[in-house]
Length: 303
Image 1: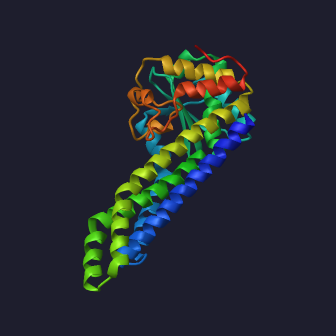
Image 2: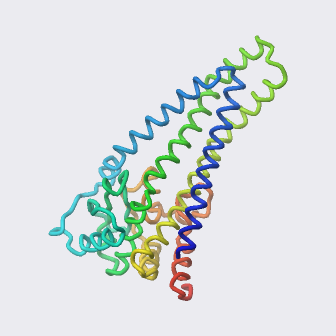
Image 3: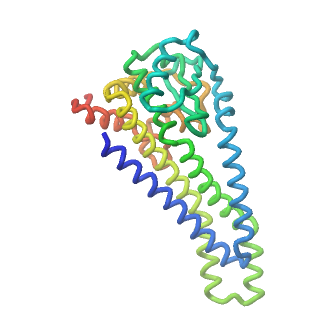
C-alpha cells in the first residue's frame, strides 16, 4: 500500500515537471521566432493564472450547483454523516461539508481548494446501493483527494496546461503572421526560420501533449486516492466492492457532463469508462483499480 502511494506521488510530480518543461520550451521557441520576446507570453500566462485562480476559489460552488447537490446535516443523513466524520478523524482533516445528489446512479466526488474548504458529494444511488464498508471506502477515497491536496494539484496542472494552450493560440492566431513578417523584414536568417517552424509544430502539438499529460496525472491521482483510502480504512475490499458495484450499475448520472466527469470516483459517462485506456481518459480502467485493491488485501482477483 505505501509503495503504491509513493510510486504514484513520484509519477505525478514527474508529469508536472514534464508539462512545465513543455511550457518553457514552447515559450522560448515562440518568443524567439516572433521577435516579441516574453512580453506577449507573460500576458498569456497571466490570463491563464487569473482563470485558474478564479476556478480555484469559486469552482467548487459552480460544480456543486451544476451537479444539483444539496447540503445535508446529521439529522438528514445520519449514516452518511457518521461515515464522513469517521474518515475525517482518520485522515486528521477538518470535517468537510456533506452534499447529496438526488440521482439513482452510484457515484461521488470531492471538491474545494483545501481541507479547510472542502465538500464531499455522494449520490442517492450510492447511499442506497452500497453497504457501510463500501460507503466507507468511497468516502475515504474522496477524503484522500482532499487530504492529498489533489484539487490544488489539479488546479496547478490546469494553469500550466492552460498557459500552453494560450501561448499556442497566441502564436497561431497572431504571433506567427506578425512575427513572420518581422523576421523577413529584418533578415532573421536561417535560425529564425528554423525556430519559426519549430514554434509552429509545437503550437499545434503541445496543447495535445499537455492535455494527455494532464489526464495521465489525473489517472495517477486516482490510484493514489485508492491507496490512501486503504490507509484510512485498513480495508481494501470495501473500496474494491464499491467500485465493482459502481462499474456494474447501468444507471446514468444525469447531472454529469464532460466538464465535471473527471471529479467523480468513477467516470459517470459510461461510454468513456469503456474506453478508459485511452490517453485522454481522466480515470484508469476500473477493473485495474479493483485488481490493485484486491492485491493489497492479498485476495484473488475477481473472475
